[in-house]
Image (cartoon, each protein chain N blue to C red):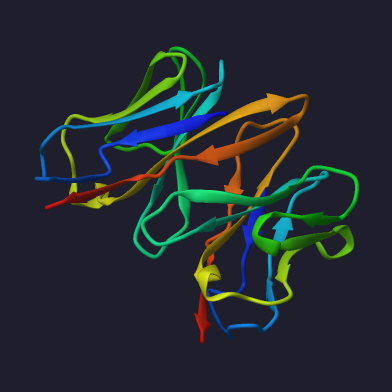
Length: 113
Length: 114
């Protein structure tokens, strides 16, 4: 069965510092991978997605993620965090033969000035 | 461009009362539609999804139901709310391009059952 693990429940960084949020998935075939961001009281906004091709994916707001098949990971990165990046981040996995996504439990990012 | 609407934005209901949450999508045809629930401090739980009018798949047995009376309208209902139904309800839509499908989310409805 498909599953997604986000090992870090809560991360705190200083503004301007680099960021990496971890995501590990379990799936037998090539997955489709997504990162979403949710600000408090809001819906989820798509940051980036991976279907195939280049394993380094660029997204909105300066985020990028790298698909590493050997590690079953799809970690989200940003070189310099802004205070407005404080939010909850969700990794999700989908597949070719299903209309559904499996979401991780989320990582809450706090940014200190 | 496509937009998704949910209403109401916030709802406070007594235990045992009925519920109707509505989701509509504009700017696309024959989307897949989804209802998720997000309990406080937890991830997203898929409740229902629909691939067409009148076609509903239920993921979790509960006192909620869903209907899709029109192509771009998805309704979440309950005859009698429970305290455990409190949460943040998110509607999402997607369209497949070949084998690739991306879900886009609405703004959500916060439901508090007292």
